[in-house]
Amino acid sequence: MPAPERQMHMGVFVLGTGNHIAGWRYPGAADSFQSLAVIQEIARIAERGKFDLLFLGDSLTAGVNDHPSFTARFEPLTMLAALAATTTHVGLGATSSTTYGEPFLVARAFASLDHLSGGRAAWNAVTSSGPKAAANFGREHPRHDARYEVAEEFVDVVRGLWDCWDDGAIIADRETGQYIDPAKVRTLDHEGRFFKVKGPLNIGRCPQGQPIILQAGSSEVGLELAARTADVVFSVVQDFSEAKAAYRALKDRLPRFGRQPSDVAVLPGVMPVIGATDAEAREKLNTLQSFVTGSNAATLLSNRLGMDVSGFPMDALVPELPLPDTSHGFARAMLAKAKRERMTWRDLHNLTGAARGHWVICGTPAGIADTLEEWFRGFAADGFNILPPYFPGGFDDFVDQVVPILQARGLFRRDYTGTTLREHLGLARPSSRFFS
Image (cartoon, rainbow, N blue to C red; front, side, top):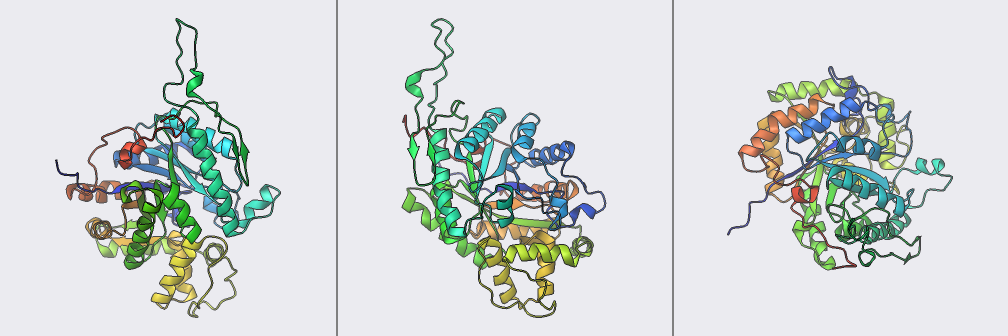
């Protein structure tokens, strides 16, 4: 029997009132990220579009003067628990920090979400690149590589805790009075460099075996962690050739960890701006860009590059700059694009204001579908993390106009064939390492 044709995976990145820094100002856009009704509507659109995953970005700082429309937000796991009750298929993913969290609490929270959702939970394991978070925890922010040393052990502890329960451990036998089979539960007894965790969790084995692990690191140490542990990798891209090379570089690392290329889905972030004609799409993008102020774009760009850029002349070319100690992915992609296209600081401000450093495509539904197909068939991506510029209309446009074209071309599912996120991603349910 021939193998099924490879198909795209799709996630939607829900950040604030839209992924454009000023998307909330677009006519008809939601203007609050503290509205459960808005989030529920986004989830309904995602399920109508048969998306694999709804993903919530998060921050541990307020950022009132940085990008205010992203500031006031629900704690993501609380929000996803509410969505678990009003959705049936779409995966539910959220960020939780390995630098400012505790493995036991993270493992328990995502195991709980997996049970509440019937097997749809995903953890985005991040090291918290922004140094301002440290002040909220009474700590000093660790350097980049030190954060990843902690993350390596943190992820291993979380996965170990998920494996401390075997399937069938909860018997609940009314005849004998036995509730739990003690032979199917064990302690973790982890003692490492950074953590000492006994375990087990006080919740049974997850419906997915283990929740899905998401990652977005693109530094050398970040790629190693992703190759060893991630199921989905969110990538920051600006150029097809660079994206294709990065895709292959990650996939080539997998065999060293006993993994296959199909074990990890690479989903570049992309902001689609859609119009009936190219001119209409450009006008929509121009309207969004007209809302960007010099101050909010400069603040976000400074964060992306890890340095204050407010003093550079706006019409000067962007010089060669070192990668910061914050996030390598955004800085690398943006600086490479600036060098490749001889961009000025004004150009880079506009790029940051549009999609916070992510890739923007602007055009008709068919034109956008053509571009996504080229990247997918060219093995620069296994699908895409869609970043609507504003909600809900910007997401409606993609689901109602682009998704049907991809479906007609056989590139994306017409319906769900499973109920868990692992099934959507085509990943096998893992058995416990301790009981297999």
